[in-house]
Length: 75
Image 1 (tube, helix red, strand yellow):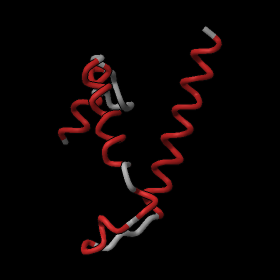
Image 2 (image 1 turned 135 degrees about the vertical axis):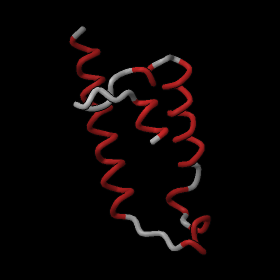
Image 3 (image 1 turned 30 degrees about the horizontal axis):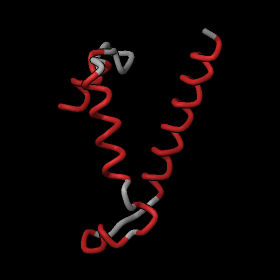
Image 4 (image 1 turned 180 degrees about the vertical axis):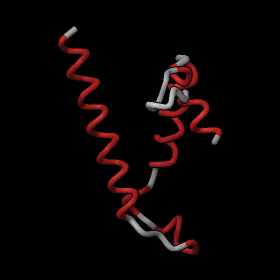
């Protein structure tokens, strides 16, 4: 169980770092596909979101207002 808690902590930390990176990376609309360090990120991001849905994690409560992950994505 301790290993699982450690994994969850690392995933949470990694997602926060991803969020910070995305907010700090400005991309011009006409240059979207010219950002070399973002190659394949879209594919990995959709794979992550698909894993959430396929394992029904999208039904988990995602915030303190009791909204599910699915609801937040739809919004």
